[in-house]
Length: 412
Ligand SMILES: *[C@@H]1O[C@H](CO)[C@@H](O)[C@H](O)[C@H]1NC(C)=O
Ligand SMILES: *[C@@H]1O[C@H](CO)[C@@H](O)[C@H](O)[C@H]1NC(C)=O
Ligand SMILES: *[C@@H]1O[C@H](CO)[C@@H](O)[C@H](O)[C@H]1NC(C)=O
Ligand SMILES: *[C@@H]1O[C@H](CO)[C@@H](O)[C@H](O)[C@H]1NC(C)=O
Image 1 (cartoon, rainbow, N blue to C red):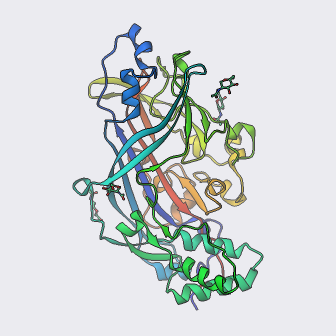
Image 2 (cartoon, rainbow, N blue to C red):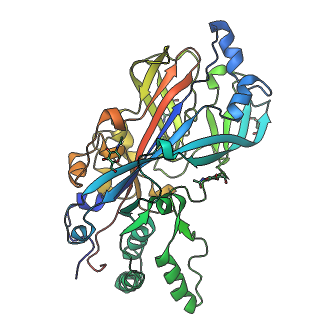
């Protein structure tokens, strides 16, 4: 009987790279401003031009999905290294519109939600939505992890094994790109739900019927954000004050790690200098990040400063003690450079975020999968900021979503 993941080295349990998301903002609409006018022009005063531009983004944003296609699924079950081929990009144009906007003039704050639309761009994509790929199945991997660690013990594991056999699924399944991105049913959950309902248990009432990277995301209102409008102090412009009405997050282990810092990343304060540290609160990561100066750049002949997500962001808690409080659960994964475990803010789904191809990651991670080639040129995250206004003229936010599959001898 083939076992799921027989090998037992620590690193081998941290694979299951499923995808990379690259989002690029190309901000071409840039009003030419003279220095002394800048501050009054950029604040978010109701009915101003900047307010209109902020409400409905008119510049192009693209989301590019790169998916890792696993070539040797059956060998992986027998303990071999996965061999992956990167497919894509599958490119979506993103539209962004703010809604439910509430302005509080007294406190200089604006509370809003954002509606993001996603439109497939076949011309910009390398491949079609009907391509078939073998990828890590996030719902199945989550179930395996959940059941193995639960009180159900070996009974739970063997039941899950039976169900997986009945629906002919494993932790790696083949889907079309359309299914992976738009969403597909989750047969194992449906079967489990059926079986449990015999006992009158409604276990899965809240579990979604489908899983997909953009499932229930298209034109769906986001969480609410409260930001500063800058009308009192332009240096506070677009700083995030609250996320879903909370002034800090609660996923991490200390007040420091739980701080909500900085803007939403679409702009920064005016008069940006190379020795500044730029803070961004990133709801996708459930945390604040800091960007540091890299080099001078030009975007369409406008001089800009490039700030990047520094290597130390990815450093293990051993090398960077400030990262210790981001280590919540899997003590083993915290000791590797390159990983951020966000399972606590993903309903315990075993999700780890890294830079694409484990850039800046531990060599053992990179070596645990055949087919990775980290390269700063393609895989790092940066923003090009026009220093006078703090506007972001070009940016690439790049991340890889990894699924942590614990080895379990009893699951086939
Ligand atoms: C398109 O994808 C194929 C494999 O799916 C790859 O070999 C090729 O390099 C890609 N082309 C570009 C321009 O990315
Ligand atoms: C505005 O600020 C005051 C004082 O900090 C606070 O009591 C009040 O609740 C705030 N109003 C809103 C709508 O957040
Ligand atoms: C999002 O919704 C729009 C409008 O209904 C549709 O044209 C588009 O294809 C949808 N995109 C995705 C990814 O579902
Ligand atoms: C939050 O910002 C402060 C400076 O305002 C900084 O000292 C602190 O390190 C930041 N915290 C995080 C988690 O980024």
